[in-house]
Length: 438
Image (tube, rainbow, N blue to C red; front, side, top):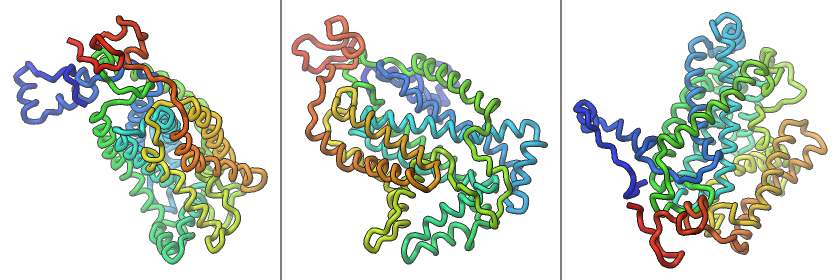
C-alpha cells in the first residue's frame, strides 16, 4: 500500500545503511508492521484476530517441533510415546496440552476472522486475492489438524482416520485407488501413521509461506475497515506502530489468559475421552466424531441419507462437504453489492445474523451428535440454508437491497460530519475528492 503521507525508512547508522543496501529486512519490517504502514483509524477489535492467528500459528510450530523430538511414528509405540511425553519428559504434559488446545484456539480465532471477513465484505475488490489466499490457508489448516489428530493413535485417532480416508472411496473409478494411496495400504496402519506424521510436520511451514503471501496481498490495497470506505486522506489512518501494535499486544495477552485456563485447568474439555484408549481395529467406538472444529462439515457430510438418482448418498455428502468450503472461493463474484460492510446493508445483515450464524451453529451441534433423528433432519435443514445463503440469498439480496448511506470518509465515520472532523478534505461539495493533509 503506497500513500504519499506514509513514512519512509531512512537509516542513519552506517551499519543499518549497509544492511538496508544489501538486505533490506529492516525496511520490510518497518513497512509491514511499523510506522511506515498506515492503517485505517476505525478498526475494531475484530481486526485483532488476524495478528492473534499468527501468534497461534507460531505457538503450534514451536510446541510441535519440541513434541516431534519425543514422538515415535510407529503404530507399535505411538500411543506409548505420547504417554511417555505426558509422564516422563520435563514439562511434556504442558507441551502436549498446549499443542492440543492450541489447535482449538487456532480454529476459534480463524473462524472469527473468517466471519468478520464475511460480515464486513473483506472478500470484495480490491482484496479478492487476500480472501482467496485466506481460504487456502484454512484448507491447509484442516488437513494439518486432521493428520495431527491421528498421531496419538488412540481409538478416535484410528477410527477417525478410517472414516475420513474412507470418504475418498466414494468417488467412482479412482476412489479406492486414492484411498489406498493415502493410507499406504487397505487400512490405517504403520504406513499411514508415518505419512500423516511427515505431512503434519511439513504443512505448518507451507502455511507460513501462504501467510506471507496473504500479508503481501493485504499490503497492496491496504486493510479493509468496518465502514468499507476506502482511505481518502492522512486523517483516515494512523501508523500501525505504535497504535495497533499496542492494541494487538494487550489483546493477545487477554486471549492468552483464556487459553491458559484451558491448558492448566481443563485441558481435556475439548477432546474426546476415547482417544486415551489405545487404537483397536477390532473395537468400534459407540460414537465416531472428529474434533469439534470439524463438526459443521461433518454434519453436512451426514445430511445426505438417500441416493440422488444414480449418485450415491455417500458421494453426495462428500461433494457437499468439500463444496461447503469451495463456495467461499466464489464469494467475490457472487456478492454484487457495491457496498462492502454489512453495517450499511440492513437486509443482508438480517440474513447474516439470523440465518447464516444459526445455521452454522446448528450444524456444529448436529455434527457432534449421533447420526440419528432428529439430528439428521436438523443437519439437512442447516445444510440447505447454508448453501442457499451463499448461492441464492446473497446474489439476490445484493441485487435488490437498498443500502444505508455511507459516510464520506473514515474520519467522518469516527468524528462526525462537521468541518473539524474532515481534517484532510478540501472545501466544496461533500463528494469532492479529498486532498492529502499537509
